[in-house]
Image (cartoon, rainbow, N blue to C red):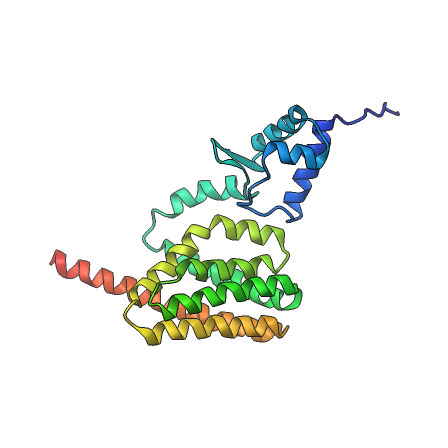
Amino acid sequence: MFQKIKPKRISDEIYLQIRDLILNGELKPGQKLPPERDLAESMSVSRPSLREALNKLVAQGYLEQVQGGGTYVKSITATSIDNAIEEFVKRDDAIFDLMEVRKILETWAAYAAAERASEKEINNMFEFLEEMRIAKEHGQIGYISDTNFHFAISHATHNVLLVHVMNNIYQWIERVSYEIRSRMHNKPDSHELLFRHHTDIFNAIKSKDPNLAYGKMLVHMNYIEQELERIFNKGKQKESLEDS
């Protein structure tokens, strides 16, 4: 009936601690771990024990080791989503399906962030908003700051699974931002409108008004969706004229 209690090996303790930090969101997708020497010292363990734990975490898909570049936290949804994404991207209407998913996830994220965001997370959003403002004033596209602003909101939901899912579609969110902003390069009014959208979302989250944050994000998502339809329909019309 009873079984002997076996003491855990040091490498197992290390594995469990790092795994739990990933699962509870304290270590985020894409985050780089400290160098092996520093990590072993901070955990008061030997480097061989640490290396054994890291190898196990890599094998199970929690971490990714880049040759000469260090060890990074991997998205816990990466394996299941990556396979589907590989086929998904071949479709012509993939970007519109993405926008539908974004609309669902990001309106809820704005709502939840307005309820849960810490002062540090709100300050982080503001930094990306400022980067967008500076880019706008210098005639730059600013799509990276745009993307990072949306990710800062997802982090502020404190929903670990959402953060990992958003991390998996990061390249698509970045692409959408680039497609929209690059075509507005010579349209200051359009860039101003985008900046106002983000400012409205930020102010609603900062003021802790979930319903307002949801509504402002929905306005923004609807606008982006309309712009994508205009951009891609125009492209299809152009292709039709060239073929005829």
